[in-house]
Amino acid sequence: MQDTDPERPISLETEPGEFRVIVVDRTIKAGLVGIFLLAFAAALYFGRDFLLPVSLAFLLGLVLSPVVRTMKRRGIPEWMTAVLLVVALGIGIASGTYFLSGPVSGWINDAPQIGREVRDKIAVLREPVEAVAEATEQVEEFTETQDPSAMRVVLSEPGLLSRAASGAPELAAQIGVTLALLLFLLSSGDMFYEKLVKSLPTLSDKKLGLRIARTVEREVSRYLLTITLINVGLGVAIGAGMFLIGMPNPVLWGVVAAFLNFIPYVGALLGIALVGLIAFVTFDTIWMALLAPLIYVICTSIEGQIVTPLVLGRRLEMNPVAIFLAIAFWGWLWGIAGALIAVPLLVIVKVFADHVDGLAALGEFLAARDTKTTAEDET
Image (tube, rainbow, N blue to C red):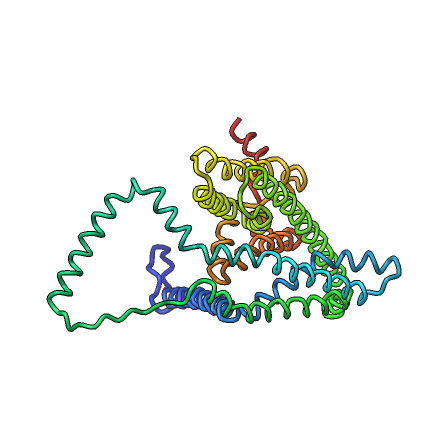
């Protein structure tokens, strides 16, 4: 008679073995995902000289493609509009580099003097440090007297200006690649959408893919263009404020503020620190030195708390934690340029995730906190 006791223990030859297989399978999958992420990050890091200009070209293409399409509807060929836009962009970059190279090189050359002036103005705080430095010098003198035949080797590192000059050809090559690729992207018109439609299998997939691509382009181009205009206005306001209080190179401060504002949170803090440092060296009184960073704080606060929310609304607001992680990640990979494009890349991912059902969880994570829902939950 067959035993049907429900309390009978499970045989070790079946389910325990299958359980071990499932655990190993999940471990392998997790390991493969981790290896892929590490390889992807390594590819981004070592391929930054190629991938950075390509990414910039695609971002600029998203911003300028609506202009090309609008001009096409008015009878102007796509290639002509593309050439005009790229030439205008190249002239703008060259002109800005020419006019700003003087103040920037002056700052670099005067960096040692600025450092000495800062040290002189905080001499009261340097007394404990000076005591330690004097003790260190006495130790060094004692060591030299013990072995007068010893030879001291001093290695001088290249200055900031020479290092910037050595990196100029590489930067020029990356700008050239960006502009050339942008020209091809803009002059190709709707070729990307045609290839997308042809590559998808079914008619419903073609319609869905085309709708998603159009939506991503429209939302991202609107966001980038709006943010660019807001940052230009912020740069003009800060430059005017620096001019009124007598800060040196107010135009340069406006350009720096406009670029740094593409980096949320971190850019404003960095700009305030730089303005405060130069104002501390430039002005004789502490009140005038505090006025420059105060103007910077007021302008960025008005932009961040009033202008940007009023213009963009809450549609593309994002999670501050995700923004900070994106800035840290892309800044670690590609430096300042990576930090500048971190948020636009994150916006592209969010817009794409909002229109793909399988990525709804990612879009929800990247979205900002819903203050209305939070208030209802608290009540």
